[in-house]
Length: 492
Image (cartoon, rainbow, N blue to C red; front, side, top):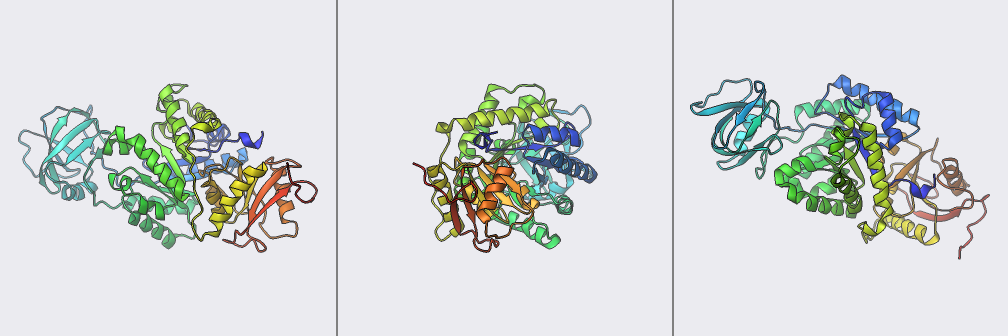
């Protein structure tokens, strides 16, 4: 395959009953999966241990460095267990929300009693006020708070529907005091650190402190430091993302809860705004939720879904994500293949892409080096830009400038290499040891040829820290021609 035809936007796929064996996962990887998502809102620790092992085995068989993203549940707001077949709520009904596992203390006269998760009842009853909106089942049912008798609340239904067990709740416009990381999340995080996940997604992030708290938990409990990805879905994060972007390693635009919280009509604009801000700062961004939703039960997507994926590519996203399509749908492999085809088609139409006219951060050597490398590679017609990097920072920085020339990160640490699995345009090559040699640039050229990233006589642009190749020392750009160690010749 000619290197320029390689896909730049990455694919994140959620694993589940439709994709829970090494054989199934290997098919997804060979179809284009770059990062496997383990959704800790479902499944036991044993299930996730097995999925983790299956991904590592499948990736080895496929010869690809696949990242694993642990997605923590967060303070999920849910109703409790309701007798089947559910409760039909009508506009005007009064509902008493009370902690599951307790007996209602408020009057039930003329009211329908519905339990909600006991761990959230107390905090929610302190956060809401008379007139606050509470939505159920992804916003299908709407209500307004009439009375508060902590930990119980009385609401009046404005838009009815059938409510069944464990359906989600949303409180648009109400700042929540619930901790971003619950006790369950911290237990799940401990497992993720033990297994060695490559990145961790934190749900319902509201402030930079949510991120720094979890990073501190990671530092306290492990020498393994996965990337931390902030899921942007709450109103507080959407309208004040700057602080979060400064401290997070990536963001995930979780459009499902965002649409319920803020209104579906606002999501496209918010998506573009968040992607633009992330691009400018070099923060990887994943666009998620219902991208190919119809492929849960259909072998082909709708035209609207194809446009949705393509527009995320045009906006500048680093990765797009499949949820139920790959986890529980009937066509998981076809969904990954379809997403890959749509991405490739969109990337071929560069006239529709949003090109950022970014300049390097003042005083940053690595920013200046990688910015210059992207421009030089384009001017000389290089086949690839090779970043010799220990941590992957140089490659992530280069990706920020969205060069048309392929980016190849040459690394000697597979764990660090996997952290690039949802970064735009970066391919990884693993070598035994990254050390300075007298023939450093010749070594890079041979490595690219051996890994089919370049051919003899090609020009490549190499960035590295010379002479030591130490960590954080990127200070050199070289235009190198792959040909028997001969010097680079100019091209007319």
